[in-house]
Image: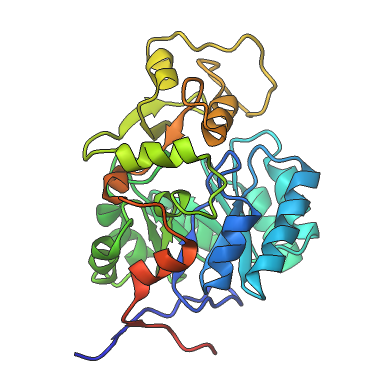
Length: 320
């Protein structure tokens, strides 16, 4: 058998060698080191902007650029974050290649993309939002299903959401959620996807900014371990059990003070501090987000080896 041809992904004026976007994982899991490595290997690397100061973001973009060797570097920030637009504006000023946003929808971001000439890619979970995004000038959309790690906008599988959304719009549609290994990739390629977004597999990479104990928690996960926790953002999130998550579910993790990092917050616990603690390796005080297919991960790998895992034997697209 000959080499199988991968789909040609083009987002605005951007065309990566491989049709893969690395998910933007906050808080500070996806920093410049990971995004740059993914970009260097021929994908689109995303820095997670949520929880970063402007100076931190500028630094991470420059780190990514140095590593990427001309590859595509973007940013993903939660619309629900208080500083969402400021972070995106800083990224634009620093010359970012792509703007990706989830946990809400922002018309202001669409306008920023138009003014700056930078492609905007919203993360959506319905036909209605995908059509609206296209009408407002989105260069592509990411369809994220219930299998994805982190905050979720749906209880439906990405495999069910993708076909009607793809039918409804003319822009590229990427699928996110439950793409962790070669088997998952071949499954979604059979659906004629334009591209994939992958988060959880890259969180368990050497270049990920997560602590070793965070990554070890991934390696310990069994099928069915991922559960949904209601985030103070107002959305459910896919996570792995930790001492902190157990307390949060029982109502024993309410914060003593609030920094106002979200536009709206239920204040059941501090999501930013919980994610930051987990990233630092303090699972007693941290929340570990993970996708449903995390149980398929049996080793921490380099980004280069992850690309081999996904794409070995698959012919990369030709650059235009």
